[in-house]
Structures are given as structure tokens and as C-alpha cells.
Length: 519
Ligand code: ADP
Ligand code: GLC
Image (cartoon, rainbow, N blue to C red; front, side, top):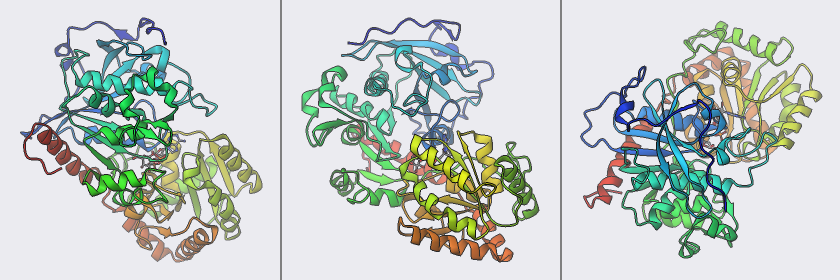
């Protein structure tokens, strides 16, 4: 049994405050415009990453962008664990509530952080679980924390507690929107408690499932009846991700193509049958991600040389900076970029295999990312094989990533699967044409031969055929620039996602209240 949380120490928190009304007018807090929407709902967004504070990939970007994009329609607030990066951010945290423990899940506190633009963050404060050096999921050596099942069960239970008004934070959601396996137990605990608050579960990546041994059942306070096929049982174990899907009122994923793909054995990660039956019942749909307004090449403060559509000289200046940053030779050939988590999903072994082809044809590659130690090592080795032609930086920072999208001619994204993918949209917005596998959100956001190059098979042959087309286009500046113009003008934004999410929220709440709802 895990001991109770040690008290909150240090000066980082002010406590207590007189309930949330004391916080509404915090200095500097710009409230989201109160809208005319008569159906405005209170939505708790439960996530393990938020780009403002901590992120390892696209989930962090989406968690930061979507609540803001919806602020004019719904009151969306975010619940996130109090990792060290969250507690150490410059934003003050006010303790507003406390939650009791349950089974081996320790008690915790709820802090409130108001970001400058008015986004309200509820921080789950439990130092023994979250305040560690590393990423949200593991130590800096890439190993997952052994108690992740406790850490994220605590997150799910906190969401359920807030929904049941147990935290007494004077704000109770009409709907809980949980994301990926770390938040998977939120709908589950709510269901087991008989909560009538509707829940939406979004799959950002089906391959990460949070699978734990059945022996953890008592520690997490999971009822035995949950351990069946319609519940969270998964091939003799328990899956947090399956719990999220099994117990939520509705499931979404982040592109239409991926929503179809995951109902097939090739992409279903053992859950295709389960998901196909959800689709048949009308309980699974795809809503594509967007990108936020900061992706504007003419104003981006991260760029040494912001540029407009058509200013290809300006783009070339950015290319020159990237070459310097990565120790690459001066060149008039094409510059390819890899901006990626270095994991199996992203098909980096394929890029390794086509690197010789790219270099022989006069191309160069700049690679930034971090991830699995073996993948990192393989990328380092690639740079050593082709000095001056391939440069690698292991690690990640937003400024370099943005400079790479701006400076490169092409983005390499040979993902084995891609639920949505944001990098290919960022690249297009900055005039870098993606060379990508024809799957998931890549298939939905890249127009082959118009805004990028798609290839069908996860093979070197298929990849090289797309690269050969990219080299051909590069040799004809008129054609290259026409494609850049189309890519930079592609209408990626959150509008297309906001409406379907907003409608879904309203329908799910109406249905839960017994009013007509189409869902
Ligand atoms: P995924 O979420 O699968 O990594 P996306 O394309 O949806 O893929 O999102 C990638 C986002 O994460 C982009 O904002 C990208 O710049 C950023 N990113 C890429 N690699 C890393 C990394 N190693 N650490 C943190 N963020 C990264
Ligand atoms: C996941 C997926 C990625 C998606 C992101 C945000 O990390 O791998 O394709 O864009 O989540 O939804």
C-alpha cells in the first residue's frame, strides 16, 4: 500500500484560497470570451501532456490547442499530473481541493493554474507519484516508471472524483473528455461508480495501451466484474486503453482514415474486433487534428528569417541556417528533415535504409528527435557514416524544430502507422513537402503530387520511388514552388475539429440527460 502523500512543501503553492471565485479575476488572466452558445458545457479535459508545460509528442500539442480553440463554445479545463516541469513553471498554483486515497492510490491535492490567456489547468498534486526528474512516462534513460499504473490510475480517479464533485473545487464538469491510455481509467471509475456524467475517450495512438497484470487489480481498486471481454480484460491482462474505450459514452480518434484502419487486424493492435463493433454501433468516429495559429512562417519569432509564400530566397536563408546548425556542407541540393520521436512507429529504420539513396542523389538530411536508445544510436551512426551530408541532434526543442520545417525542402515521415500526425502539417505550412507513408492522418492531409509525396508500402522500394519523384520535382523550380504554394495554403486549422467536437459534447450531454441526442 502506498503511503499517503507527503504534504506540499516549498513556496510554489499558495494555499488555501477562498474557493474559485477568488481566482476568477486573477491579475493577468484574460478570460476566454464568454460566448452566445446557449449549450455551453463544462468539459474536463484529462491528459498526460500539455505543450505549454510538458510534451513528448503531438498529444501535448493537441491538449494545448483544442481547449483554447473551443473556448468560445465551451468551458474546457484541463486536468494534468503535477510533474516537476508543471510545478516548476512560472505560473502560480493555488491549492483548491483535496482528494482522498483509494486502494493503493494515495490522497492528493488539486491545484489551480491560470495560464496567461485564461486557460484553466487543474494540477493533480501528489509529489510521491509525479515530482520526478524525467518525462511524464519515465526516467531520462527512456525506461518507463514501474509505478505508471498507480500514477495514471490516480489521474483517472481524480477526474472521476472531480466529476462526482468530491474535490469541492466549485466546478463540476458536464462531460469528461479523456485522452489516450494514461487517462483511460477516468471513464472506467466513473462507470463503476454509476456516474451519469457522459464521457468521451480520444485515441491518439492505439499502440500505447497501458497493459498491466491482473494482479494489480486490488491496488487500483478495480472491481472484478471489469475483468471480462466487454470490460478492460485484454488477453489475460488489463488494459487502461481498453478501459477508456469500453466505459466511455463515445470514442473518437484523430483522423477518418485511422478510424477505419484500427478496425482491421493490420492496425488494430489486437483490438480490431472490439473497435469494429463500436463502429457498427456508431460509437467510434474520426475527427482530424488541426494546427494552431502560431504556425505562420511570416511572423514566427522562432525563425531567424520569417518568410512569406513566394519568398523562396527567404526560405533559402532558413535552409542555410539549418545546414550550419547541423554541421552540413553548403549545398544547392535538396535538404530533407526528420523531426520525430525516435520510435518504431515512425519508420526510422526505413529512412536509415534510404539514406544512401538520398545522399547519392545530392540530398542532405537533418535529423532532430529523441526516443528509444537503439533508435537514437542508429541515427548517430547514420551521421557518422555521411559527415557533412547527414546531421543529427538527439534531443528536442521547439525552436530548432520550427527552423527545420522552415529551412527544409522535404520532410521525411515514413510512419508505419500515423493516427493523425502534426509534423506533416507544420512542414507544409512552412513550405517543406512531406514524403510520407500513405496511412492514417498522413493520407488525409497530404495530396500526393500536389502538397507532398505519398507511398503505399513500408518498404525501401516504395519509399525510394516517392523520393525519386521528390528529386524530380526539386529539379524543376517552377514545379517545386507551385507545390510549396499549395502546401503553404492548405487549410489546416482547428476550425474543422472544433465543430464536430463541440457538437459531440452537446449530443453526449443531451443524451445523458435523456434528451434527444444523435450519438
Ligand atoms: P507524435 O505525436 O506521434 O510524435 P505528431 O506529428 O502528431 O507525432 O506530433 C509531433 C509533435 O511533437 C510535433 O510538435 C513535434 O515537433 C514534436 N516532437 C517531435 N519529436 C519530439 C520529441 N522527441 N520530443 C518532444 N516533442 C517532439
Ligand atoms: C499521437 C499520434 C499522432 C497524433 C498525435 C496527436 O502521438 O502518434 O499521429 O498526431 O497523437 O493526436
